[in-house]
Image (cartoon, rainbow, N blue to C red; front, side):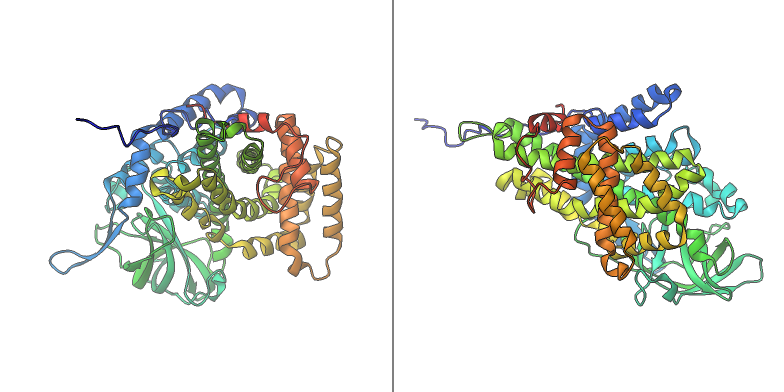
Length: 545
């Protein structure tokens, strides 16, 4: 005789699948519409919605889980003892990377509204699986550095901006699409790249060198080429190192090991050795940092975009769970305290998205004023947005209770990923010091930022007071280095506040200014003051499933 059922599943939310990750993100959609010319807007929206539907599909989300469950493996030798230095990836990784390439996530430099549409796509695709976004970012960012040498740019740029994912190591001329990585960091120097010890010896052919040395962190070691820094006779210089030479032979690129990282498990990061490795100079000898700095700036923006994507997915999962979960006699999303938490998380996410897309739009504009704006705003945004990612994802996981601590929920992967962008491309102190450097050397950068902030003057008294406090901070230069983080945080918050006051719904701008600029909140999420329209803030953040 059958007994009573012992396992009836009730009060569990359905999976958040089968939705348009782009179209469900109101802040992102509005930013794209704001920064895209009318004549291409329909094309851009259709393109991003197609990518958003793919990102929200069950199949693609399974690829993301598989790519992390089966991380890359290093093969230093073939079965016969030949050195090959290849990295094997799970098929899901190749599917994800191929989709990212075909979606134009390396092609910002060649299309109308290229940076805005690419930034929005990058933010969307990060929400599927952040690891494959590393080679997409490096490949995208290599283009401006290569343009220091028109001949190299003419050879490589069509491959880097291609929408064809051509996997495997082949002679460059035989590839319809190529990926790039970067090697700057060494054991003894870390962020102090001028302490690099890798040596570059000139060869007979003009512009060619043999490199000898090591790189402590080499991003995306399976790529077709790398931009690296090494000491040439004239000083620190940028070089292009191809994996396969024109004659089809393998360049000397010795992968010693793959890093065992906290997160970003699907992506390979390596220690590599150069031993007479053939390289081509990029730019002038002794100007390596100047040559590669545009690549670094582009990847720093991607760090902000990547963190904004992680935050958005964490918020979407938290709101979705609380919308479908009941406790204490009603839906979690309707409980005042949970609503406060969700609204606070949503504010952080929207502010990050809005600022990151504004920076992408400045790249598309390309004017002297906008370039000056980027010089200060990029390191400030990179510092603050990436810093906010880790506490937000942890709080979002807590919204799911014990489920948020279980791998199947997907939140642990977001939590492990969340500190990464704060470390990559210069950790927090590096960004803060870069802001100080720009303030001292490029006064036009501060003028451009203040012009942007000033467009919201008079719209909110809390914002105006925060701007006044920022001026006070800038006027006191004694001991400024020790206060650099405080200054950069204020600058980023004021930039976010200015954008939200001008472009976000009143309930979002009001809550942001009250809590972030007016100081009316506690030290954790969920401490927003009374009197705000939090229900509307949460509703705006709700993913449409």
